[in-house]
Length: 111
Length: 116
Image 1 (cartoon, each protein chain N blue to C red):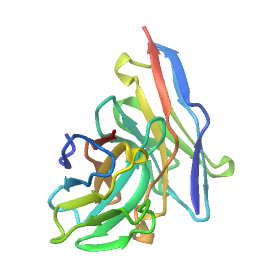
Image 2: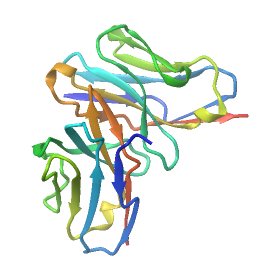
Image 3: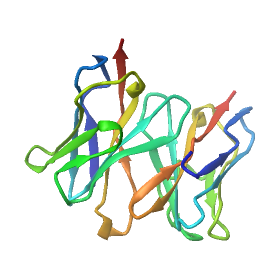
Image 4: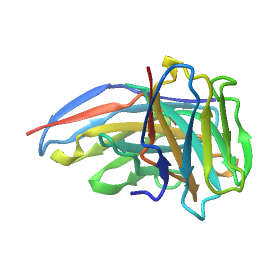
């Protein structure tokens, strides 16, 4: 257990529905990252925050994806109008001294 | 720009024999390099990291990696494989620490199988 918590661990939804994932980083870590991992691939960077500021979001896959970290602590990743291609593992990580600590991920299945 | 290539998608070794997982990187700066391990249904765990100090880096569980700038390689090795080493291994490149951004770029992974 790295101390980074993600919820839910598994989500099954129907195409067109909205889903939201939550990440609770290690409390003293000010940077938080979201990655997506599809089957047989390495994790792919989506976005990251320093405290509450979203410093890069250009890699968010479409305008259906959005992320927030309103108080600089936990973060949420929302996917609107889900599509089957959104099925993947969504990973959160927080940073301390150059090392990223990853949560166990939230697995999304879109039917 | 940065990228990383893991040369083998699958590696199988017998228990007790050496492990070699190969990684080549490309970067327009002096990068930081990492190896992460992912066991089934578990999160990614850092094995070791290189950040421009010693070129031979020792990590957890007996793993080590050598940074070779001339070959743009960062291969992962272990002298003697253990059954518990069976997992997916990712080679990762990131900008150096003074860039102030730890945006990691992952390779596609190498699945390590240990034969009893």
